[in-house]
Every structure is written in structure tokens, then in C-alpha cells.
Image (tube, rainbow, N blue to C red):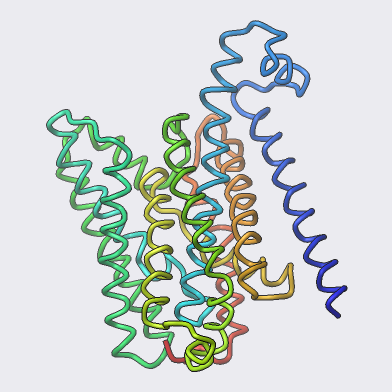
Length: 341
């Protein structure tokens, strides 16, 4: 049984890596200017001097697809952490309204600074997004202490998301005309406009947090078996829960700061990875969710660019089309939706 499970996990990781490589290749070559693999390779290796092609590949497409890979993986891992925290596969940053809280705080910061011509560093965006995530998470935690059914917690999260989105729209409505376009595009979710400076910052944040999450694999596995079991294994449950929710909020905040709110990735991808690998063990699920989330967002970003080109769809529109049915199936199959939060 252990050998079969190992073979399944190995095959799953190989499959994810192959899919990611194929999607990276398609993302690099596809767009308003179509290139062959040979042409792109010559440009990247410096064998062909074409400033336009170099700009398209190196300054537009490569940063964008790198951002999709990193942020998609971050959002998926964030969703897995929340599912571990609440003990429910329907929990996720978007469903619980955490992404909307981050979106509201960043929108307030953008409106407050752009009208004075102030351009903020990415670190300020991440900080504002993290603050919004933590406030929304604190509210959800307060609600979880008052209700017994997970379904009511989900409803509270969805309502929180609606409230934050409504306030965000109100903020956008009173923004200067010059700022409305930027705010609107960002609030819909998109990887466009990402440059290498943004990629470097998001890579540092995501990879450092991902390493910390991976170090928590063993206590997470114990926590999944129950708080009493985790305490008997020497886990300080109170501190562990704080660290878990903080790491999840940082990952979700980083995604919202750079790409805006992206729906359903944090719920759908962990579920799909559990089905693919046949396990919920954190030591397997953490890297699996990162690779699966990256592949999912690469695919959705590619479709967002190509389906109705030259018009580009928001990334949340595409992720919702693929992610929402997964969530619906999960809710229909889940008999014990009234589990304790």
C-alpha cells in the first residue's frame, strides 16, 4: 500500500510538472503576437536581434506567467491552510470574504494616495492587503465562535465579502476619473502589468512563507486528527492556530496586492489535489497545492488572454467558471456540512 501510494504521489508530481511546462510554453508563445518555439528560443538565447520580440517575451509575457505561477500557488496553499484550520474543505480566502477584506483595504490606500500623485512601493500594498485580510479573518474567527454549523460560517463569510465589495465599489465611484480605470482593472483580478520588480518581491514573500508552511507539516498532520491528539503530540494548539492563520493571510494578501481578488482557486485546487494524490497529508498537499494552483492560474490566465482576443477577460471570471462547479460538487457530496468550525 505504501509503495502504491508513493508511486501515485510520484506520478502526480510528474504530471503537474509536465502540465506546468506545457502551459509556460503556451503562455510564452501565445498572444496578440504569435511566435514559434524556434523564434522565441532564438530571441531568448540572443541569436536573433528583435527589440519588439525581446520586449514582448522578456518584459511582458515572462513576468506575467511567473506571477501567475507564484500567486496561483500561493492562493491554493492559503486555501489549504484555511481548510486545515476550520476542518472544512469549503473554506477558502474568497469564500470566507478574506480576499474581499484585503481588496477593500488596498482600494482605500490606492484612492488615498493616487489622488495626490503618490506612487506607493509594493511593500505598502502588501501591508495594506495583509491588514485587510487580518481584519476579515478576525471577524470570521469571531463568528466561528458563535455558530456551530459550518454552513452558517460560510454564509457569514460570503456576506462579509459582499459588504467589503460594496464598500470597495463605493470607494471607486468617488475616485478621480484618472484613477477609476486602474482601480477597476485591479479590482477584477489580473496578472497583466506585472514587471520583474514585482516578481522579485512576490517571489521572496511567497517562497519564504511557503518554506515556513512546509516546516509546519508535522504539527498540521497532528492537528488534522483533532486538537486533543495534537496537544498529546506536543503541539501548542493556540500558538499553532495563530501561526497558521497568519501565514494563510500573508499568502492571500500577497495575491490580492499584486493581482487583485481571484475567486475559487483556494477552494477548488486543494480539493482537486486531494483527489489526484489520494491523501490529505500536509507534507504532500503543500507542494501539490502550490504546483496545482500555479498550473490552474496559468491555464486560466492563458484562456483569459486568448478566448476573446484582443479583449482580455478578468482572471476571476475564468477561475469562477472552472472553480465554482468544483465547489458546488463538494457541497452536494458533503453530508456533514454542519460540522463544528
